[in-house]
Image (tube, rainbow, N blue to C red; front, side):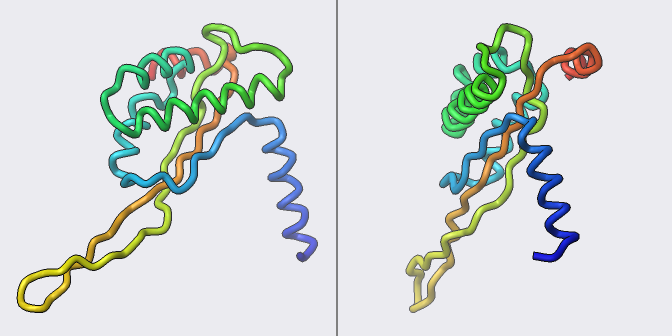
Amino acid sequence: MGKRKRIAAEAIKAERSTQSFAKLRNVPSSPRKMRYVVDLVRGVEVFKALGILHFTKKEPALKVEKLLRSAIANWEQKNGRKAENNELYIKTIFVDCAPMLKRLRTAPQGRGYRIRKRSNHVTLYVDTIQKTNANAVENA
């Protein structure tokens, strides 16, 4: 590894040590379905987001709820105290495409149709609400 890359990697590592996040990888549902659920909770206070996810009737909501609980636990572990109400919010949450499984389904006249079984990765960052962030969270 070159010097420039090492310096950049150390800067990213130092930044990540102060942030609390959780990742969910290789979820076997399409990114489009997952983004529908993720858009419901982006920028929302975490306990309100848990309520939204708990009562959403979409299957990916269960996985995002579990991921959010993991991110809260990571924040509590780093800060050494329990999260209180109206203290944390979802800073960033995004969905990326994961590798696709490509399968063939038999079709008439000796042909085959391609089936793409999509999967996704979800990344969630949690941060504390401060006076500057409080207005952004209320407006979201």
